[in-house]
Image 1 (cartoon, rainbow, N blue to C red):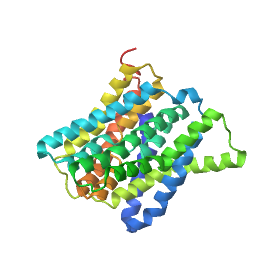
Image 2: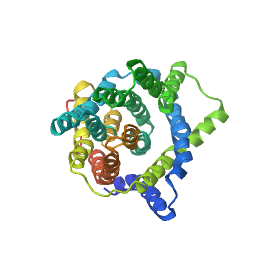
Image 3: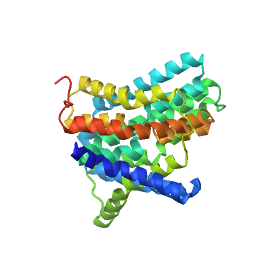
Length: 320
């Protein structure tokens, strides 16, 4: 257990440091802008490119793995969305945000850093594949569901254009695509470029986690709405369980790939859910609360999951 605590303490410690520093210094939320820009447009793309470019190309086309992980995410989204629509008597917009809060994990800021720390460099490929394909669907589903709710006034052509731009121009997805192409071409950057990428990659996880702590501090939790209980249970418990069963069922993957996917499924609600809620002016305060609550709870649940994995209690395949 001490090994697991030693693994997660620096990781969650960075989030706590960001939270504490933000509460002490009382900087405005705008002060976080350039750090977020560095993380999203420079550091994390460099990390994804560097790791993917060094991976044999044939390992980047595991379609069964992609299907299993994405399928589990959208089972969770559907459960929360349908339940919310029934309870709210047809409210699609807020149900979409609730569904995303239950299914859309913090795989960008937290996923890469924690998976690499827990499982080593081999975790880079499954993390990048999950990130790329899940985000393509996340970027598409929010505007489409808002259009169905009647809150989105764009024409079908404008809607398609907005979704395509979000997918094609997202820096993480661009970096993933370029990294896959570099792996296919077996391209190796010049030594100075490689060193620059290494510097940027090493900064990605610490900066992202610190910024996440700052973000949580700037959005204090005033109360816990009743909807957050099923969201937290779906996100932190049922999502990794379904992912584990689905991947064990659809194929025989390596231990690192299975556990990397399960770990990403167990991560708390992504801060992007709050951003999407703000964009459409739907369920904004509660979206913020879901990020904070699931992040705090994940300290216990993620630590417990890693203990199950590291102790050998959780087998790497349910159906060997």
